[in-house]
Each structure stands twice: as C-alpha cells, then as structure tokens.
Length: 330
Figure 1 (cartoon, rainbow, N blue to C red):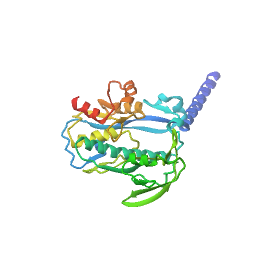
Figure 2: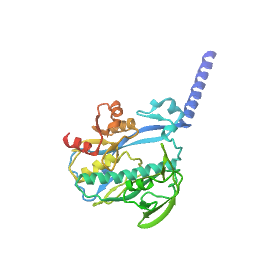
Figure 3: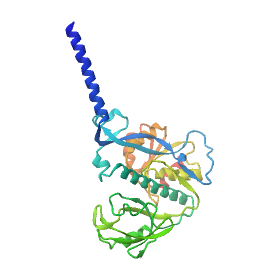
Figure 4: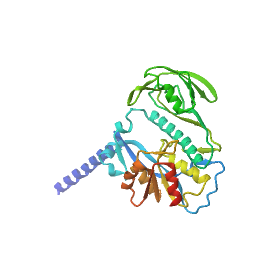
C-alpha cells in the first residue's frame, strides 16, 4: 500500500516536471523561424478601381492572394515541427542572412509590397489597352545597411546621375556603369515635386565586385490614366503582385473568376513575367483552407505546390498573359 502511494506521488511529480519542461520549451524562443499557413484573402477587399464593374457573379468566387505567417519558433516547435499543420522551420541564416532587425525587415517588406502594387496596376491596365506612360527611375525600395539608406526614399525619382540625364532605369544603370565601388556619386532627383541634389556613396554589388551600387531598386515612374488604389495594410513582400493584377482586370474587364475561388501567388515584373516566391508549402495550405478550387503559381514553384495540393488544381504560369489565358478558357 505504501509502495503504491509512493509510486503515485512519483508519477504525479513526474507529470508536473514534464509539464514544466514542455512549457519552457514552448515559450522559450529558438534562433530559428517558423513559417505558418494563413488563409487566402479576397483581393477585391484591398483593390479598389475607379469605374469598376459591379460583380454580378453568384457564389463565393473571386481572386484571392496568399500570405505566410512568420515568427520566431520556440524550442519545442523546432523539435516537433508537426505541432502545426503545414509549418516549416527555417534557420535564421536562411531567412535573414543580412541579420537585419525586425523593423528593417518590415520596412523592406512593405517597400516590396508597394512596388509590387504599382507594377500590378500597370500590367493590368496595359493588358486592357490603357496607355500607362513611364519615365525616370523611381526608387521602390532601399536596402538597409547600404549607402542609400537614410538618404534616398521610396518614391524619389532619379533624373540625373554623374552628370548624365536619366529617363529610365536602363539609363541609370548605364550612367552608373563607369562608377567604381566606394565612389561618391552626385545625383539629381525629384521628391514630392521638388528637385534636389545629393551625393551618395556606393559599395560593391553582391556577387559582382566591380559594380558600384547605392542599394536601391528602381522602376520606371508610372502614370495611371484611372485611379486604382491597393491597401494591403501590414502585408509585405512582392508575391501578391500577380493576384492584384488579375483582380484589377476582373474589376474592370471581364468576369475572369466566373464564380470560382481562385488563389494566386507570384511576383510580377513590369514586362508581365512572373517570378518565383517563397513559402509555397504554406501558401498551398492557405489556399486549401480558404476553399479555393484553383491555385495559380509561378512555374518554378509548381512542383512544390503539387506536393501539398490534396485535390487542389495547380496551374503553373510564367507570365501574366498565361494566367489570363487559363482563366479565360477554363
């Protein structure tokens, strides 16, 4: 009898100790990150087009964009990733190789989102026959830790570099071709309608020791003939570009979803080509959770998406026109 009581007390103490260990492992963060699925979001909730056509289609159809939840993983999550369906553990050196702070990563991600929205609008309107003029070299992102950080801002339009007029990103690249890494370069720009002159340092481009860079990404300054606004809130990154462009066409052109729930992911370039994205596993789970019937993905991501599709139709594309063609004929 005494032995039984001792055993029960020891067993109970063991359970308490195990619970404490599990709680510690759950709440103590590791050095790794965890990627988690997030249900797809209707693009028409964030995309607003002047003169858009009223949606008369029945059912829960529409174009949906996808996100991935990213946060520090606990020690327990790194040991048992299967605690969350569709999760992936990503080492810090892979997710954040430049060791940027949370605020720096967030700012860069929001800059990428802002640039992707402008590209999406331009690609969509041009596909519908609208004239979308471009010119200059507009800054769409500034890399933290590079010489341009703190000097150039998203929205600045560079019109001259090293004494050479700049009317496009290509002309900026040509003007910078003779600059050597470490050289300080004088540029002229437009900011909020006011012309300014700045002298900015340069550094070696990653992967190219002979090329001097400021640490910025530029695109042609775009002028839109109609008002289109995209307000994605705190969502960052460039991977919703293809979805936004398709939704603009859906709201101004034909009903391309035709009552279907179409999930879409892919970074869009100004020439309409589609670039691969990260977090494909989580985005596939997110599309399934939202009840999508079709998931349109970049060609390079298709194999991974099919691995987790579980009945979801995966459509791989290399361009915006391919995505439109699929929706038109299916």
